Image (cartoon, rainbow, N blue to C red; front, side):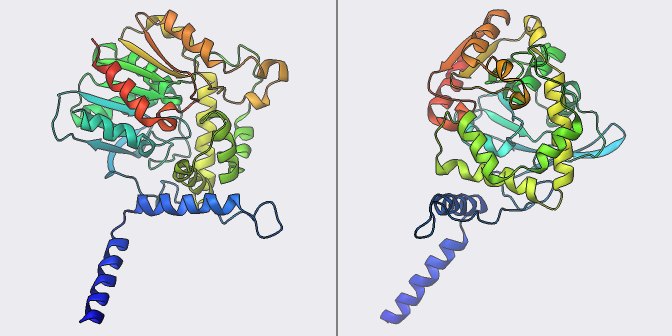
Length: 362
């Protein structure tokens, strides 16, 4: 009997291990990788880099924490699919939050906000924009913020979402601003989280950057380069193992069998971001707006390619946030003194409280 009980106990432990979600396995594996990378063999300062993950061009192989649906539509004479999450709360409050991700983010990176908003009664829709993450990577597509806004508008129309709260982070903040300008009567509230586009980098001296130059840069993307950039910009100089799954996500996308298509769309998107500033239209925004700004952010796309004297003047978010709040009619500003470009990831609990309080206010 003792042997039988031991065998049954081992079987139950095995079943529990196999029931772990793919996301949990990814988190555990990524955290272990981070620890191993930080250690070196005896007598060395650092171990050799571990093999990078490799995912498909639509992030095949990387699991999201919620079921992924797909919106099939035609745009610019080609069939496309937009992946999205649509989470319905247990106790609805009748409102919907639409979460728009940034350039190096995906719908999945909103995980903490999705759970908090859903617990508070909000339906949550979080798409992957065309050219990003689990959505199509067209080889020939005119990427504009207007086009991405129209794609999102079509998705929300299909889902029957009316007057949502738009929450846009980073590049998603630029997209949310354009959406609110295009469809002002169809947006209930606008939330901009450390949006890029608070300044016109080209007007301030950023030199022209050719698409082929962006493309060559993107082909060099690695887990190491992602981690270094995000530490300095997103997380105000501090790295935690819980960020590793998102490094794994981006590195695998850029290292997979479709990496050339991913890099090319990424180049087109960077060109869109740099050449289509929205800051000049802020005074025209006619939607109640909440700005949520991590004060240690220094993001400016391509600033490493600018002359040193120009580089130093770009990405001053403490000043940029205040300037945006002054010109957007009726805007409210929430500042996070110790956080960088991704406050929703650095301090999810504090950010979620501020977000829910901000969208609950009249």
